[in-house]
Length: 160
Image (cartoon, rainbow, N blue to C red; front, side):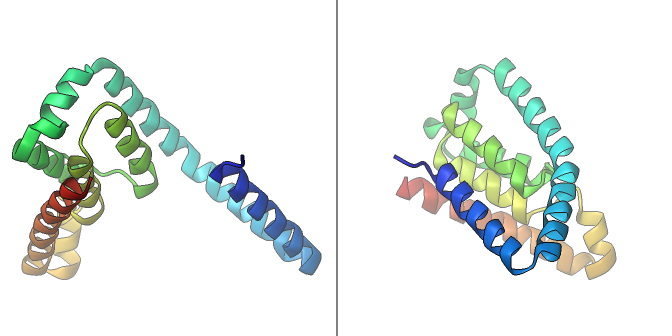
């Protein structure tokens, strides 16, 4: 049986082959550019994955279950929301972190809150937002997104 990764790889390989047949120069140029982008993304991606792996290794699953598990209730939601709001991690790195949290026992609702605040709320970037959008707009955007993340987490928690 073919896995999703194998199917994706086959489709990508066929697409590159067809592209090579159509325009070899542009295809080679695109592959080179994509490889350069990959090299730019790889170091921070690997660094954060290593850091998260080390942290998850030292934090016992019982503690993750206590504060982020199904029985954590509103406390788990707020912890995930605050950590997600403060943390500045690129989206493509947050998905493996979410998977690791779920594997360690965190509830889907809590992980949904974490992921949503991570993407939509930015305490670290707030000064920059205030500079470009104004204090009122930046704070209102972050507050509305914070509460939207909590609502999304509740819905995910009820569905899963």
